[in-house]
Image (cartoon, rainbow, N blue to C red; front, side, top):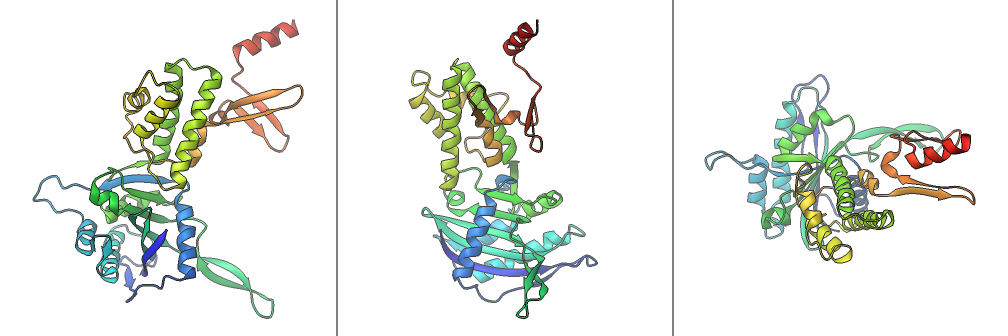
Length: 343
């Protein structure tokens, strides 16, 4: 990741105030070691749970205005360069303030604007940072309370693939991170960026897991081959995520065709885009939900146990304190064997 521009503006809104106040920065922040470290930390947080994706709102008719944020981008970003990043970010911060003022008691914070390139693509991330209280030792080794940036979680953040937006290669080029307890401001933050049709990555990822399982069932794969397919999809999705590559159904389908069903091309894609899943080609992924493709397994000399990870707290319950596992959905064949032993 190569950082091109960084700037931070403060948008302060006290609890007893109905209108926020902007404290703008008049020049870009220096791209130094601290900026690089913070950018890396924020990118890591962005990959965790809570992802949503979408695109810019399309006016219903040519006479309708487009989102103000889109107008700002079109007037300031050209051929991979922001002509005046300070001017752009200042105008965007004022748009954020306008949306914030409409939300009543919502808090403000520090707006971090970061333009960077990765794999020859341009990205813009906008992150709302807030402070938290912490402890530090003073020179005389007494404990003092300090204020520091809260980097344990993201309150609100958006990442826009500017290259994909301008080229039209993706219908979901905006990604969101909405922190816990901030779902009430999801709509206003989406409106600030000018986003529509955002969807939760968890729901789409869960559907992708179910599509993979249905694909195996339709092809009458053995249990062993089914696990191979599930592990294959799991590893490919994680690789693309780590490389900041989009997860595309057509790519998964092509890889499965060549490795598992060369005689039935496109079957995975057909299942994914048909009733009841209706997945779009580009699937937003939440890593925790993707673990539904994996299995837990373990054995001793006299015992072997394995089950899908999505059965945890559904039909498989683990008591960590007592180191006990309770299974409620016992296989019929196993029940018959156990009943025979009791007789």
